[in-house]
Image 1 (cartoon, rainbow, N blue to C red):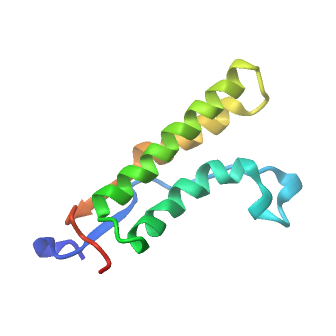
Image 2 (image 1 turned 45 degrees about the vertical axis):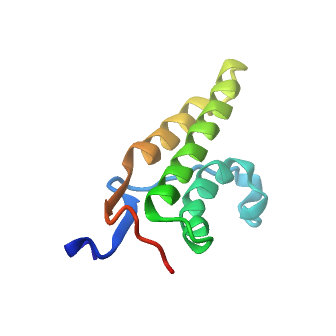
Length: 108
């Protein structure tokens, strides 16, 4: 896909993971914990569909992860149970997200 710089790959070099609030296991769209991980991931394709290039889409996703890590740090300051684990998982996703190939690639 990335040979000759004609396409790109945005994904993870590590296993993508996310945590959930078990009370929302039957309604994942209502799960505010899962959203911290899934919304930045989904932003990649949303941005591409909106006409942004691969670099901008990847950057937006990673910016959202940083904002979510800041939210989690506030929970950790309040000694919220599980905040440290939430932060570790999101950091792993952030560090693992890569863009290979054409940084100017668009779907158009």
